[in-house]
Image 1 (spheres, rainbow, N blue to C red):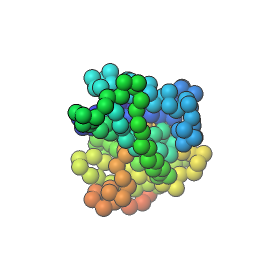
Image 2: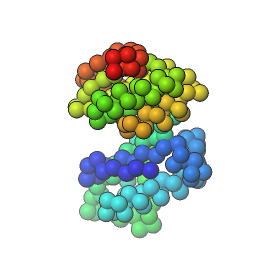
Image 3: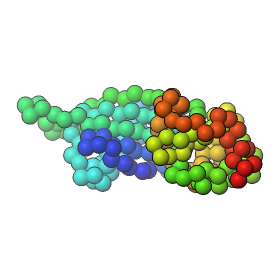
Length: 192
C-alpha cells in the first residue's frame, strides 16, 4: 500500500492486487460492499491519519479507480465541517463512492531509458504493442489489447520500471505528445 497526500484535504492510496490478497480481499469484495472491505477502509484511513497527522472526521468522498491487473487507486477527499455542525462522536464516517474501471494498462516513467529497458524485457517475454506518450515531463506507456493471461506478467514488468498512472487516457491523448502511436515495444527494441 502506498499513500500520497495530494492536497490538504485529499489523499491518494494505491493498493496492488497483492496488498488486497494479503488482507484476504478481492476487487469483487469492494464492489459487493463486504464487511472485510469496510474494515480495510477504516484501517487505511487510520494509517493515512497517522502518516499525515490528520483528523479524519465527518464526510469523505471516495473515488476508486480499478487499474486492470495492477490493483486500485483510491482518492479520498475530506470535507470541512461547519463550526455549528455537530461533531461525529461515535466515529461514523459518511462515504460517497464512485467507481471507474479501466481495461487499458497505463504506466508513468521518469525517463526514456527506463522505457527502453522495459521494452527489451517485454519483447523477451513475448509481449508487444503499446503506444508511447510524453506529458508534463513524464513518459507514459499505454498497453491495450493485452491477452488476459499476459496481463499480470505485463503489469509486473511495467512496475519494475515505472509507476501506475491514474491520469485519464483521454486527457493524455488530448494534451500529451504522442511519440509512438502503435507498436512502441517493437519500435524501441528495433532502434535501441
